[in-house]
Structures are given as C-alpha cells and as structure tokens.
Length: 374
Ligand SMILES: [Zn+2]
Image 1 (cartoon, rainbow, N blue to C red):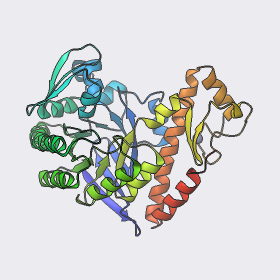
Image 2 (cartoon, rainbow, N blue to C red):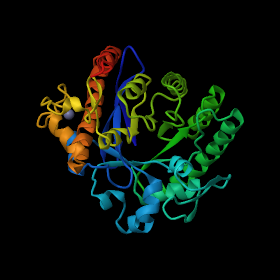
Image 3 (cartoon, rainbow, N blue to C red):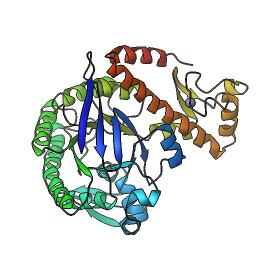
Image 4 (cartoon, rainbow, N blue to C red):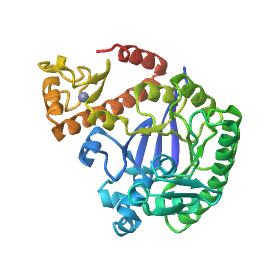
C-alpha cells in the first residue's frame, strides 16, 4: 500500500492524504461505514457509491459464522459476494469474540470461543484470522488482538498487551506468507495498553518495531469519558510514526471524529450512523434530532436545513416522522442515507479546512453550532 500525505494543517496534527489500495484510492481522513455481515444496514451499494464512499468495513466474526468461509471462498471473496467493487477493511473479530461470543477463553495459542448463533466451538489464532481475512480478500486486514475493558487492572491490561504483542508477530508472519502467494491486501497492527500510559508506550514500541504499513489505535471509545478518550488518543498518536496511516476503531459522532482528525488520525468507522437512523435519530448541523417528536408532526421543513443530501432536499420532517411512527422500512433507509451523507460531508469539509490551514477554526465553529440543541 502506498500512503501519501498531501497537506499537514498548520494549527494541529490533522493531515490529508491518499491510500492506494487494491480496489482504488481512498482519500483521508475517511469515515468508513460498517457492513457487519456483508451489508451496510438499510443501504444499497449504489447509494454508498453515490455518497462517495471508497471503503467500507466487514466484520470477520459475523462473516466467519454466517455465511461461513466455505461460501465466501466459493463466491471468490467478499467483494464478489456482495457486489462491492471498492475497498473493504475487515476487523480481526477479536472485539466481537470478547463481546458477543457465548464463552471466550484466551490462551497464548489463541481465542477459544462458542458462536453466539449456535454454540459451535472455534479456535482463532493470529495465523488463521489472517487467513480468514485473506479469504474475504480484504484490502486492509487487522491483527488479532486482545481488547481489555475500561477500568481493567494494570496487571490484566499488561497481560492483554503481552499477548497482543506476540499475536502481532505471528499474524504478521502469516500475512507475509499469504502475500507471497498472491494476496494483495495490507496488514495493520493494533496498539493496545488500556488507560495506562506505560502500557501504551510499550505497545506502541512493539508496533513500531513490527513495521506494518498501517497502525490502529485500539482500546479507545470503550465506555471512558470523552476527555479520557481525547487524552489517550493524543498520547498514543504522538508515539506513532507520522508517515503511516492511523486508524481509530469504533468512533462515529462528530465530536469524536473531529478530535481524532485533530490528533492526526486518518481513518475511523462506526455502526452508529445507521443504528441511530433505525432508531429514528438523525445527525444535523445543530445536533442530534429525534424524528419521533410530536413537534415534527406538521413540520414540513427539511430534516437538516444545512444538508444537501437527496433526503433533505426532497422529504419533510413530517413525512419522515410519519414513516418512523408507522414502522415503515423506508424510514430506516432514508435516515441511514442522510446520516452517512452527513458524516461523509463532515469529513469532506474537514479535508478542505486542513488544506487551507484552518482545521481548528472549522472544528470549533462546527461544534459550537452542533452543540445548539434543536
Ligand atoms: Zn441530509
């Protein structure tokens, strides 16, 4: 993978760039929608393309269990299976194994778990998780890591770090041999270390030594307050080489995305925009809007007067509320489109602001308006 930085903002660590990946170029900073099981919920691929997304996520844990790797292999990979011609990043599934599986035991060998669908038993190792992601033909694959929860003890967090370090070298070695046999995707290492600065330093050191093409900062946005998130994000980002793309997993609100961009993060993803949409909540320039409210019953204004998306230019709040109240599936479709458009547009505006060395001014003005409740 080639990563080129085009411009560094004068007043922050924000930067714009391009990643050259097997399924096309990806401009950064980039928000990546999550297609958990081979579909970004309530979105067609055509609509994702129309908004301008160049990369989406797939969840290895879900796809491994359903439809299973045999089906994916026969389909010649996830792109063909879901008819998506742009890039796909897959997570290692580690987070889902810990949070969703019925039981999960970590040993140095790997993660033993039972499927939350049918109780079937599986062993994931750093090696076979790299192989699974190669079968998915993911353009960016992630190492298997051990996530630790917010407020985990130092001892436990240290153990998670040590296992993650060993899994990095094993996973990266297997990935390298897969590259030799024609797999074209790239491999990202993950910095862990929980909320302990000595462990973040230790983890970052081993990740830098491994010299993968990109680096993710893991273990953030796991329930900690925003200022703790921002502090550890900034601390960890400064430990990483500036020339490589950096990825923070699982962030999807304007506040978190703008903080990440400010600290030099290039990539982020989250299920939040589509999940909020299914619950009748929209991002707007003036903060979150719940379409359920009685006040919108005869409000014929646009969902977000500052948004130029095809939903805001065509439909009224009154109609969108009516759809939601009646449980019409169109409600999820329209609100998901708007929410993803909104975040993509936020990132486009951030890129423009970085290019003109006014990112902090843009961020402050955006958040000031965003903080004004409807
Ligand atoms: Zn809109």
